[in-house]
Figure 1 (cartoon, rainbow, N blue to C red):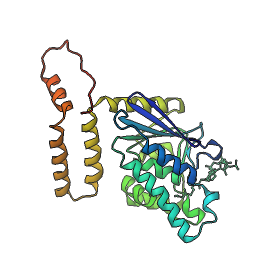
Figure 2 (cartoon, helix red, strand yellow):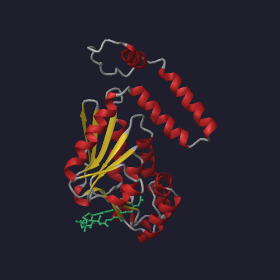
Figure 3 (spheres, rainbow, N blue to C red):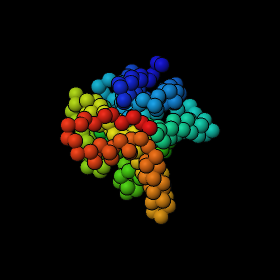
Figure 4 (spheres, rainbow, N blue to C red):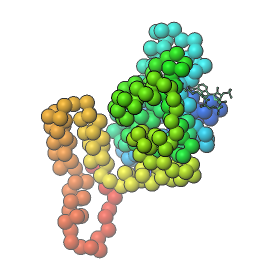
Length: 261
Ligand code: CAA
């Protein structure tokens, strides 16, 4: 792969968007490599994914403006679908995904971070949806996910004004969960990923499914979904082991890693 780096580190993996010359802007080739990389994740062994950008300056500076500049209406729609399909694949990946936003997260960059489960960023991060200043709408999910994450009022303000916000404001409005120095960001993401990966993998996946799918349902349906996923955990070895370990009064015993079954 030329534009996407992928490294598995035990039970978690780091995916780096690697087009530093263009501040990791997303053109068709990057999107295709992202798609293939996500398809290739070994879900038997990888329990959490980190997404970040190459270099010190940018996470992803958006969709590629040069590539978009000559598109027709039909091609624009197809390009939107291409990005949306990949981001949806990331959003519905069974394992949790952490965006480690290490700089500019503009347009498609803000949008890919929002298709991740959790966003943390460095203190030089800048978020924004500058599309209307380019004569287009956000096209990789921004009109939908931003409103769901920070509320319609704040999303509309960001999108209509095309004003970028810095890390501290992103934290204040709940777009990111935490801000770190540039040096601390990736270690913090890795620590979080390793912490997630220590927990029972099937239970973690069921939590992701319950939260993501439940948010699109009314509460009566959503709690039934929760009951089913909760019940399904009682068929796992991890549940039997996790509860037996708690109930065992032998304090000398060391907890074994969960087996993912
Ligand atoms: N597309 C294509 N190339 C981009 C790019 C983008 N989104 N963002 C940056 N680049 C390229 C620049 O053209 C430049 O290339 P050259 O060296 O060949 O000239 C290189 O990256 C470095 O960028 P700058 O020289 O502009 O760096 P800077 O530090 O002066 O500015 C920046 C950084 C403020 C992020 C600025 O690059 C910028 O405003 N980029 C565009 C951001 C943007 O508007 N993103 C939204 C795109 S639309 C979108 O994403 C639609 C959608 O929802 C699907």
